[in-house]
Image (tube, rainbow, N blue to C red; front, side, top):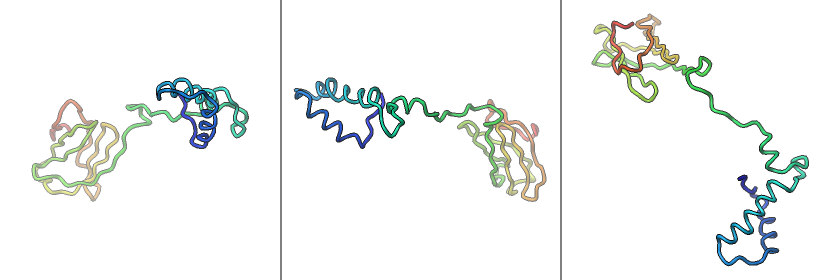
Length: 148
């Protein structure tokens, strides 16, 4: 159900004063408030809305829709600056899960840039030397160095 606009509170109060007094809150809600909200939103035309009812004006507007995951146009694109840790690996989060990417021993402490496009990961040094270019395997937590 569409909610009554804030500026119509006076109209709600005015309409309720004309109704017979309700004995309980549930009775007031069912017999009076719900009936007024239905009338206000679905029956009564509104001048500011080109004589349309508020509900029909609301229903005719375009609604925001979520984008689908996995399509090429919605692919996750990220650039991250990092450093290869003491265990000679880089950690990245993909779909809320951590994955460890193995690097060569000689790269320990090297500053890197990770270029992430969905599952495709490219790791380059700060001076743009390509270290790894591979597709992440989401079923494995550890991506060994030999894969890239």
